[in-house]
Length: 206
Length: 206
DNA sequence: CTAAAACCTGACTTTTGGGTCAAGTTTTTT
DNA sequence: AAAAAACTTGACCCAAAAGTCAGGTTTTAG
Image: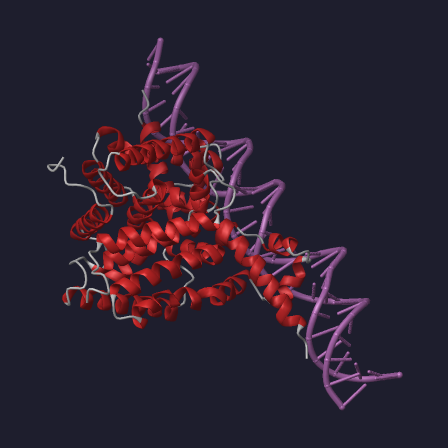
C-alpha cells in the first residue's frame, strides 16, 4: 500500500509550514515550496488541491499541540507548579516548533482570517479555564490579586516571542542560532520573575 | 506653495499603514489603499513610484517614535522609575499606534526583509543601552540578579502584544474594542508583576 | 490673465503566480 | 505479465494585481 503518499504529503507540509512562517500566506509562492524540496509545482497540486487547502492542512498539522499548552493549569492545583510548567512547556514549543508558532502568530496578527471557528472556540475555552483557575488561586490566597487574563497575555507573549520574533532575539543575543543555554536562561528568568511578581506562595509553605 | 502634496501623501501613508498592518506587505493591494480614501489607483502612483517605495515611507513615518521607547532607561537612574515609565510608554504606543506596531511586528516576524540597516543598528544600540543600564542597577543592588536581555524581551513582548495580537486580546476580553480601562489594567498588572518580580527596591528606601 | 507647474485618472500593458491538463512513468494488484 | 491504480511533470492558461501613460483639469506664479 502506498506509503509514498504519506511521505510526500508530509514533506510538502513541512516545507509549506516553513514558507508560510517566513513569508505569510499571501507572501508564499507554491513554486517556492516546491523548489525547497525539489519538486515541480504541479506535483504539489497532485497532493493538495489548492493553496488554501494546503494552508489549512498546515494549520491542522500543528494546532493541537499549540492548544494543549494550558494543560498545566488543569494538571496542577497550585500556581507554583502550574505556572512553572506552563512557562517551561511554552518555551519548549517555541524552541521546537518555531515555524508553527510563527504561522499561528501571523494568523492572529491579521485577525485570524483563516482560523476555523472550532479552533477559535477551543482557544477561548482553554484561556477561560486557565483564567478561572488563576482566580481560584488568588481567592485562596496562593498568589497576589492580579488580573488573570492580563497575566496570561503577558505569559503568552513572553514565551511566544522566542519563536515569533526570534530574528530580533538572535540580533540582540548576537548569535546565529538561539542556543539551549539561551532557552534555559529565558525559562529561568521568566519563572523567577513571574512567580515572585505574582507573589506565589512557595508550595512547601502550604 | 502646494500643500496638496503633503496632505495627500499623508492620507495615503495612513491608509497604507492600516492596510499593511492588516494584510502584510504581500497581502496588501494598492487598489485597496486607494479605495480606502476614494482615490483612483493611478493617483497613488503619482505620489509614490512603487509599492516597495510606499512601504518604505510607511516604515519611515513611524519608526522613530517606536525606537524612542527605551528613553526611560536614559532619563532615570533607578529601575522603579525607568521600568514603570517604559511599561507605560510602550502600552501607550500599543494603544495609540496599533497599526505601526503591527507593521513593525510583521517585519520582525519575517526576518526584517525590508528594514534598512540603520534602523536595525539603532534598534540594537537602544537595546544594548537599556540592557547595560539594567545590569548597572543589578550590580548596585537596586534589583534582583536577572538576565537583562531576557527581561527586556519579556517587557517588549508583553506590551507589544496589546497592539500586535489585539484580535486575540479582544477575543478573550469579549469586547469589540480594547477600552481605556483595559489598557490601564494591563499597565497596572505589568508594572506590579514586573517590579515585584525583579525585586526592585522602592525608591524611597534608597 | 496667462503660462507653467502640479495634479488627476481612465484605459491600458506587463508581470506574477495560482491552477490545469494531457501524456507520460512507476508502482501495485491480481 | 498485464491491467489498473497511483504518481509525475512540462507546458500551458488565466485572473489578479503591479505599474504606465497620454491627455485632461486645477493650482500657482508672475
